[in-house]
Length: 121
Image (cartoon, rainbow, N blue to C red):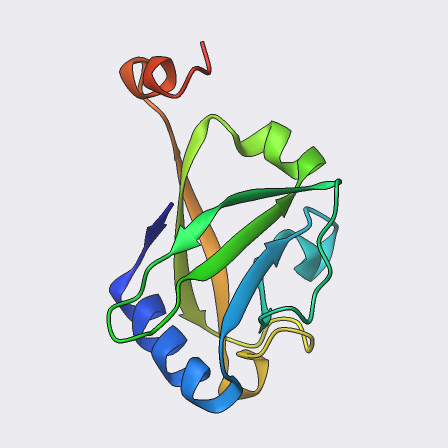
């Protein structure tokens, strides 16, 4: 996973406001297909979720865990995901919603070499 500079800036600000954070992307309809940012531990993950990794943000004491529903992961496992941010209001459940921005995922397919290295071929 990759993090845009602007998303990293927002995560630093949001951490100051809300404490440690986490992401979850469900793959549901509407805003459910966007990554949702919560105070760490406020969204319960379980066996139907995949921990994709941790986003390390300079200036933060702890990494930010990124989770995705297992069903959604099956569609996206062949892609490099970039967490980014754009102007506009997303879901009311995600901590950035009142700030007039929303997180989103940009993706690109892994190359054959990357896929092989990850054991996806």
